[in-house]
Image 1 (cartoon, rainbow, N blue to C red):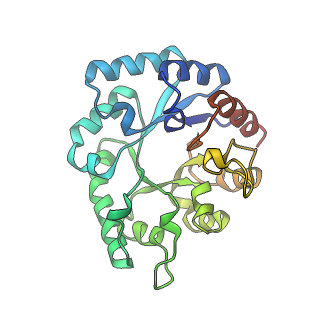
Image 2 (tube, helix red, strand yellow):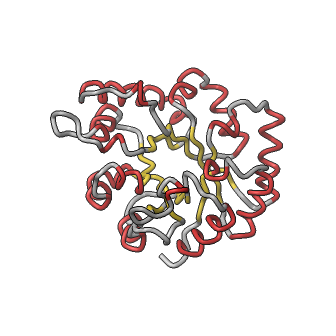
Length: 253
């Protein structure tokens, strides 16, 4: 059975995290994925305390999100965070709207920047990749898509494929798994509610309770090198429901 992770961003509005770790451990999750808001400002003592809380609940923070700027400017701090928390994979997760290029050349340049950023992390033995949202799949004026150019500029980084964002970007996830499957080392497992539903949850759904074809997708994804499957819901209004229903669905795939 595939081990399941949980992106802690999903629980940011349901504090404290110590209670979330307990819920996740009891529900059967084996891993969590962190993000900058959890650990960027912690000193070594704080990081060790966080690690102890995870250990206590049988959880491993196997992967983490760090902003491109942080990864670029705080190399030693980023490496220290990853080491103390026990990560094996580091993903740059997002680019603010005002920083996004408008043409292919700009996206290739951003890819080259990621390629440079990745070097000290890969040298230290970490998987390093890019996590997508929807904007990487919006067509540029020439008909190409930013995701192609990012990876053209960064030939040595991997892809944490956020499937639901691929769909929201107007793209076919099966086609992109086929095209970029050799890059995939982690997957975000989340679902999209049917049109007009879950408007109070930004249109997202618990895994298995939306319209994303997860049973078929898992067949395709298991042919990739994905080692982390990470449940995420960007705006749940009931964290217990999201935690329990998502893992119950995932275990049937």
